[in-house]
Length: 282
Image (cartoon, rainbow, N blue to C red):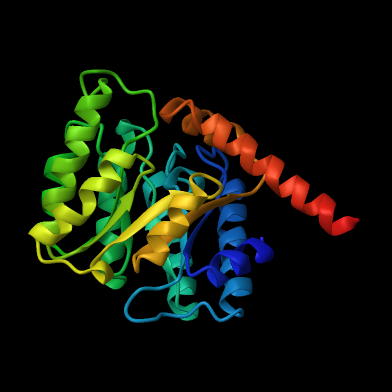
């Protein structure tokens, strides 16, 4: 993990690190996730990841269901307390925290917890999913309070009653949401690999008078690496989402459902890393 962090930082990119695990049904598992995040922040914080020009190079992404949100008894309070402990450590080492979105049944709870945390940690990030029909209104509320918002398309299998199912509709919703966020007081995080959306971003940000330092792009580790480097080289903030841990199954299926071509990206990235390791060992 440290080698990956170092290589990405040396290339001028920022990081968002996610400890894999969700929907825990045991408080001990939630506590283990907290310990993993605290340990990660301690290790990377000691490696000089500090705030720079208002943008913090290191971010951790967390799912509230991994912190106890889904527990039958006091789940929301447990998740809030656990997330608060992570935010306190992140503040100490100069990192950010962003709360991931999950399936639509958790959205109200997640936004409520995020709002509570933002009182003490105004830099807290919140993820919204453009394929949900409610998200345009959520973006308007978050933009009005100056929140840091990661806008992604969405990767959960949701019913048509709550989510757009057509790809063109999702793209249209994404662009409408992005215009709302860029017109607001917050910090938009454009999480996409879609070349149509990426091509539209400069025009949308210019419309709202934003400079390159007033928003960032986010992409998955190992996906469209050349595009990540191109955007970074052009002076943009680019953050790479790096998952770690052993619970890969749910994460992988969502990425595959979101875009089947991601399978080719992941396999290519895995092959390249193994090839590089083999060369280094010769």
